[in-house]
Length: 252
Length: 189
Image (cartoon, rainbow over all chains, first blue to last red):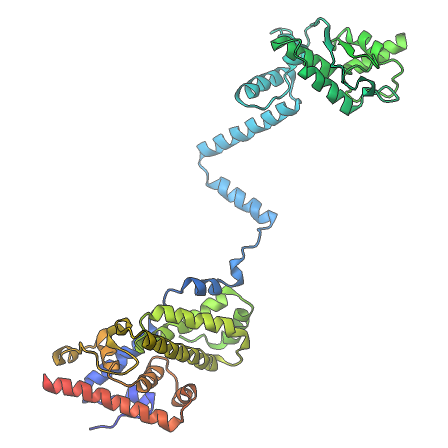
């Protein structure tokens, strides 16, 4: 019988020719080392991933490219829907900050105030009257002066600073007090609060607990003149009434 | 599967934690390690192979050497892990965890195949495992490290901590034993 060799080369390349089963055995055993790598355990998988596991934040350019790629993959209908959505969001945002044309502002305010708890300014409410279909905001609308009695504890003497300009905090407190006042209700209450918000909120009647306001318009000049005496620096609320008020002061 | 000339750069990258390099090292040696572990009759070769490479990757910063030395180093870890597994199995005395009857004792499995089954033209994996089970643990280590891991006599001797002559003797006796088993079964057919 042939003796087995002492090296793998002899063992593998020169197997005993009279022993095909031993040759098969060694061939089969050798194939065990050439299989696919086994599935790594979770612990090993974590190590294999290494530092590549940390996905760095993509730079802006890459993110932009990814966004463009994603948009390119959308269908036409999806792109149209996305565009409408973006436009609607933009209009809504503009409406929320009140920079839309008045007619558009009214439309946005009507819709948003109806379907959401968010309150955005409405020009019709600000005017305190329905906007005439033909005149819109340019219509010569006069709202009767609304008298709002401020609560006794309202800090009316803080409503103006030394130069007569309304302090923002006091203005807010004034409007807030008007909003809390329940002497009026419903639409009238809203109009009153809106009017207070548009006014200088007691600036002309320093120390008084009652402020009488009129809506901006043709009468605003006179009103502003009354309220704006001695105001050479303009007002923080900066509406058209202030300009008229200055003119009124000049005339006075 | 060997990595070749790029081994040094792959190893350096793997040391820094690069996933691609670690995966490359794993793919180059995991099949052979799994085959070696399976040849030792470990119950769950895939799990033990993963444990071996967890140890390899954890200790990677301490390794210095070329690809051949890396191969020997990895199989040294695998050998020790297999020995630990055998001890653990012995403590549990759960012979059912030994795959295909291959165990650390080197005893012939109780369900030894009939001669006609062994004498097939092509030996399947189970038949090979059953034949391996007839060897002693040292013989099985030597055969698997030489055939599956493709290590030289000197490397196996260093790995097992035995003289090269002793490894040669173990290999000789292992092959003789296998031949006797195969021929005896063939004759008895």
